[in-house]
Image 1 (tube, helix red, strand yellow):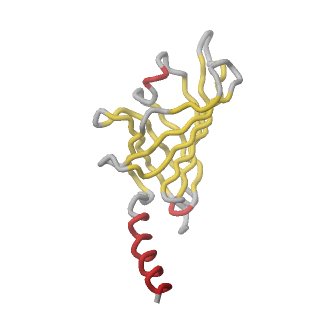
Image 2: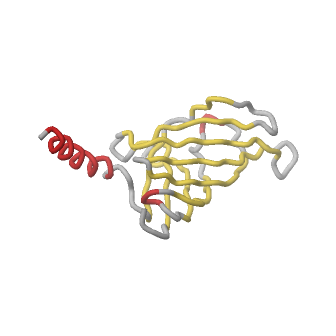
Image 3: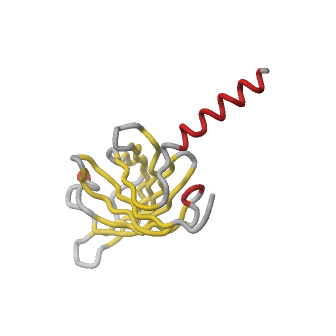
Length: 153
């Protein structure tokens, strides 16, 4: 009897958790400010940080982990950020990568618009490709995804 009760509880909990995970296609998530946990701001330094991810009603739905290599930019005195990021929602993961010039005021990231390539995923995002655009939306930091997935999890 206890096993049946546990089984029923788990079966009802799983769909609720899965509701947090968007399907492939177009979707947006909202981001808190990036928390840098290690690194610096000199060329060649790798900075590591994380961001809590929310849905449109402010519910925590996941985490974005970010690794950034600080590199020289294309012009004199410019700094380029080379970014690897991993968005995890309910054990489903999207991987995105790219680079962009470092902003003059880092605490505004990503209030300016930039795009990164989505280069893979797991779970419902298996075989993901596409792009993610970071911008200011509804007076919050947002990431808008446009993702195509190649297969079932």
